[in-house]
Amino acid sequence: MNNQTSFCRDFLIYVGRIRDFTARDWLVYVIWVGMMYGLFAVIMAFFMSGHMNGIVYPGYAWNIPIGTFIFSTAIAIDTIGHRTIYKEVLKKGEALVHHITIAAGISSVVALCLAYENPSFMKIPAFVLIFLSIVYSLVDEGLHWQRYLTLQSDRVEMWSHFFILLGHLMMISGWWVWFSDGYPGVKETLAALR
Image (cartoon, rainbow, N blue to C red; front, side):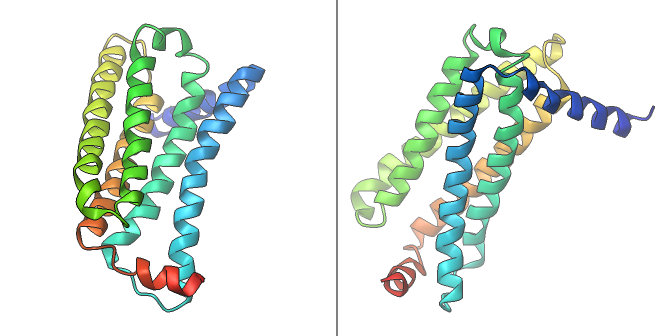
């Protein structure tokens, strides 16, 4: 069996663990993954509404919905392992890192939204929260690599984390640049939606 076939098999086993979910696991999964895909849906709806009304966004701004989709999909996969095979090991401290990362990440998106109306005040909180979300993501990666190197993790989880970082950094970097440029296209889109 070649490495690619082996990875496909490992992926199917990893995703298949969703059958082991308890009712609480399903609740957490649906809320968490639903919230992430909800963010993607809202962002995409906004961009498509503007696009359909002739609004031209800067090319980099499209990294926001693309990154959000990659981020959400990777989270949907990763969370299966977190709610099953890695549930107990996460209780040793990694879960707290996840909660801090999530709090900083959600707060950074809220801050960037609030920065549209209050750019001068919100610039620093948005930047700090973005920075913290990245720092804690890297702390989390360190913990995952430690587990992987001691054979307490697998490559499906590691690849899902690669795509979580990729998606998050594409989304949040695009959003920061968009904010820094004064959110070109947002005013026009909001006017078209009224």
